[in-house]
Image 1 (cartoon, rainbow, N blue to C red):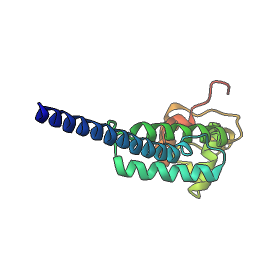
Image 2: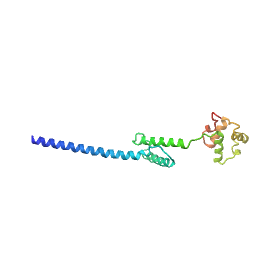
Image 3: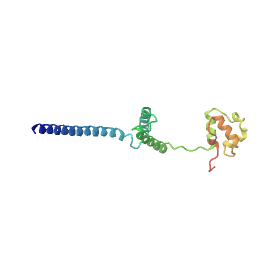
Image 4: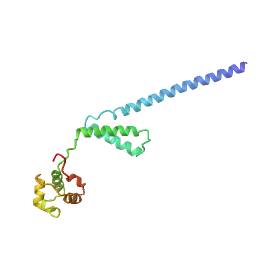
Length: 163
C-alpha cells in the first residue's frame, strides 16, 4: 500500500510539473504573440504619409521575397492586408487622371522625340494637327497603327464616352 501511495504521489508530482510546464509554455507563447502582434500592428495600421508608404512597400517586398506566391503561408494574409493598405493610400494620394486620346498622343510624341511630320505614314499632318486640337477623331485603322507605333494598347487613342 505504501508503495502505491509513493507511486501515486510521484504521478501527481509529475502531473503538477507538467501543468506548471504547460503554464510556462503558454506564457512564453503569449509573450511571443504579443511581440509579433506589436511588430505587425504598425505595418497594418493606415498609411499616413509617403515615408510610411515607402517603409510598408519595402516590408511587403521583403515578405514577398521570402514567401513567394505561397497563398497557404501563414504570412500570406499579412501580405494581402499590407498590399490593400498600400493600394488604398496610393489611390487616395496619387489618383490617375485619364488623359484624352489627344493628350496621350501628344505625350507619347514628346517622349519619343517625334514631330507631327514623323507620323505622316499613319495620318496626314493636317489631320494630326486637327486631332491634337480636339477638332477631329481618328479612324480605327489610324488608332491601331498609332498603338503599334508606340507599343501601347490602341484603346488609349479611343475617344472617351464624354468626348
